[in-house]
Structure formats: C-alpha cells, structure tokens
Image 1 (cartoon, rainbow, N blue to C red):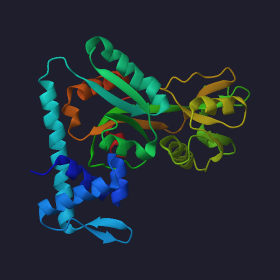
Image 2: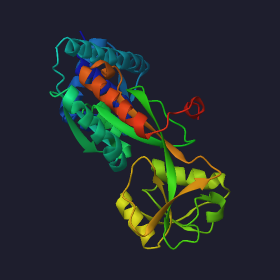
Image 3: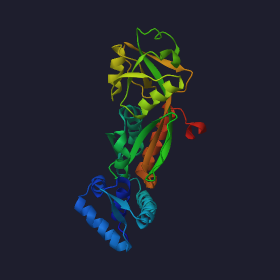
Image 4: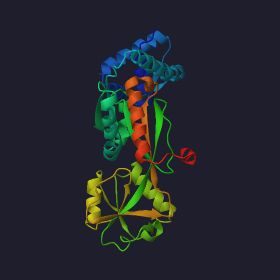
Length: 311
C-alpha cells in the first residue's frame, strides 16, 4: 500500500522541481522529504527522479506514477467526502481565500448565508495573493479559493483543482468629478487614449484586463500609479492623479470626488470562479459553501456565457 503522503511529495516534486521547494509546499523538513522519496522509490522498485543540474527531474517511471498520483489523491479526497457525508449535520471547518474585493462581495455574504442553515460549519477567511494560492490550495492550507481572470486571457488548466464558474463582473470607469466626461452617462474607451491611469499590481488579472481593453480600443494605457487596494486606487483618482477601472459587483465605496461611468464600445469584465482540490467538492462542508457562493454570485454577477467559456 502506497502512503498518500509520499504520493503528495512526488506531485509536489514534479510541480516545484526541487526537493527543498516540495518540502516547503508540504510544510515538512527537507530531510523528511528525502526519506519519503527514498521509501517511495524502494516501493516502486525503480528510480523515480534523477538530478538535472540543481533540480530533480522525474524519470519516465516517475512521470507514470505522478499521473496516477493525481487520480489516486482525488479518489482519497472523494472517499473522505463521502465518509463525512454520513455524519448527520456535522460539517466541520473550512478555510477559504480570495482577494479583498471578492472577500467583501462573495466570501463574507456566503459565510453569512450558511449561519442559519449550517450552524456547525466554521468558515475561516484568508486574503490571498495570486502566485501562491493554488499551491496553498493543493497543500491543504486552503479549501476553497475564489479567483478572477481577465476577459480574453487564456485560462490554464490545473490537474490539482476543480473549477466552479461563478459569473462575470463588469467594470466601470472611475473618473475625478472634474473630468470632462464625468457628467456623461457613458464614455467610449478610445477617447481616453491620452489619459494617465491608476492600475492594480502589475500583471494581475485586473491589470491584464486594463491592458487588454485598451489594446482592443487601439492604444496602450499610460499607467502612472499602482496599488493593491481599491480604496487607495479610488483615492488616487479623487486626487486627479489618473483614472481607473473598478469592478461593479464589488460595490466599492465611491468617494465624493469620484464618478463611476460605464465604458462603451467594449465588454470590459473579469471572470470569477471558485477552485477546490480535485475530488474535495464531495465534502459536505465544501459543497455547502460552494452552493452558497453560487447563490450569492447569482444575485450580483452576470452568468458566464458559452462564448466566454471558450475564450
């Protein structure tokens, strides 16, 4: 019988490239990781990894085993979910994560929705950053993450995760109250080619959305300021230091010196979805929270069209 913990190590080694990084992902020491890999190699009877410079590369045998490991670990998650489902009303505790704007508009309302229907379910909420959220999910530190991706951006498949679509979030333009277009009901994006912009962290989903939208209007935005917090972004707009896109469904508190105007001529939206470890959607706690997320999203987000899913 192969220990699932050793299969998790092999998966982490495949994804991270070094034993030290794999150990860090699983929150074990490098020496413990080395011992687990040696034990798994003895059990397999063939070498599973070989040195490739400073990294460890899986052998052909290792690649075969890691492919089965993904399926086996998903089966373990599903089996544990079905076991938990037999416990009447005992849903336990889950940890969910997302970005600040979706914490307020999705995660908290979903947690509040469960208070009456599932009083014994504890939902712990964490703010996440994009680069590490999938590793934290796969490693068990998080049970559900809510992520966003820019309209038109390619979505990468992740063998570790199951994805649940929640809808799309349209964006408006945030303009200083003294801006020439602030009194108009809508503004064509091409008219803003000479503006200076305030954006989010470089390369994140909302920053990519800004650049994709402006590119479709025939220009590259001049990003002058960046912030990871929507309150700071709106403060910069109010100070007439630039204009910005802001998510409509997030229901941000718009300062008195800022006007929200709809852009015309282009669909400017981000796709919102939840991700869980593959197989864990059968766990009653996770299933209940996903259902609550979908119910909250149905009130504030537009359904994702079939054409969107193909983008």
